[in-house]
Length: 150
Image (tube, rainbow, N blue to C red; front, side, top):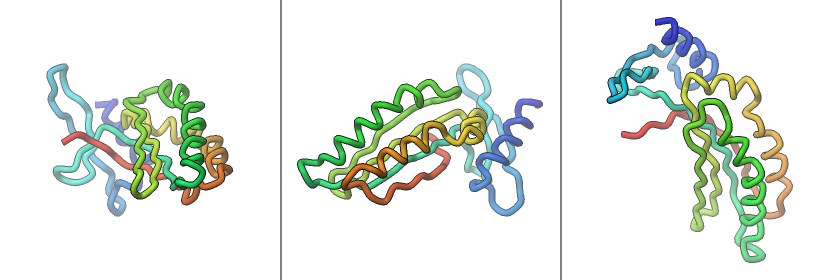
């Protein structure tokens, strides 16, 4: 029970965007083969145990996609750090050649996400500064969201 209360407190502070009004999300348990997994319920039927941070930008096809190549070099510099975060579940890259999107998504256990948020999502600032300096990169943004398999 203490774990559930602690998880709810962390999520209330770190993932408040997912909480409608002033209501706190309530923790629920989902049975799995290995036992119960603590979940947070945003509203009835909408539960999660994973929170992700997305870094996204647009790249240019100019100069044989030079900006895309440079973005990937910066991603390669931070991938090890992201994969070593406490509670990390996955680090994924999404590239769309049609709309020229580049997205880097880091997913963490919901109960560990608050610590990363308190640390400023390091190395986010350094990463964003570097990609913003790349010619042809535009619309650099971040977003936090929950992500769950269905």
